[in-house]
Image (cartoon, rainbow, N blue to C red; front, top):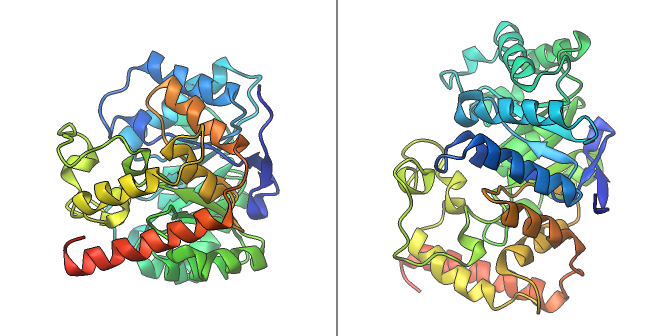
Length: 330
């Protein structure tokens, strides 16, 4: 395996690679992925130094977890930390976030992943009030005491939710959307996480592929791809698709961002490198549907830090895109 920088994932005390492997794609929610292709992607990631997989019980209704479980059973030499998520398979009401359901949900994930104790379980963007509930954290502490899970964390939609969770002493990490088109977490969330010793997992790092620079305004995605059916938040939070910005605006901004890539680096690698060097980030979790994508994503960890001039240009581009969203044009 290729050595990659490792950082401690908050209160788990475990070190994970700065580039992890997101596995939403492996569940089939971005188009069908065959099992042998999924294993090849995971193999490529591990061979490139990745030691962190992120999944969820809702990705392919458990298929992503099952694939990871079978892969790791076949690769006992792979020292991979697996974070999963729970909660989105049920109706999104606070009343469902109770101990009995937590036990059932975590037991299902344990079976899917083929493990007695889950490394990390994240509440999967629950209703906002859940983050403030003492009973919820008591129930999660019970799962730890019962050795169903080793640690717990949260995945959030908003900065306010992140700050609420960071204040809880048992929360190991926070997963949040962060990329050059989504800078809000830089102002308060990352500094608060650093001060509290909470890990930060950056998700949707390429703005659903926009920052790869490969899409045009005429690109057509498959009918089962969330980039087709959730552009305006029809199925789940709009921020999960193209970081919540208008697609046409995003394509234009992505073309501008591509101009910032250093020599020898792709637009996607530049976006990942930008995230990696933000103070407080533990790991970034791009997805991949091919061996080439997985290897290229991991290679971003070896890029030199981006200069201040590039960081300034990203901020200017972000401000520009916000103005475009407000006024409806560039």
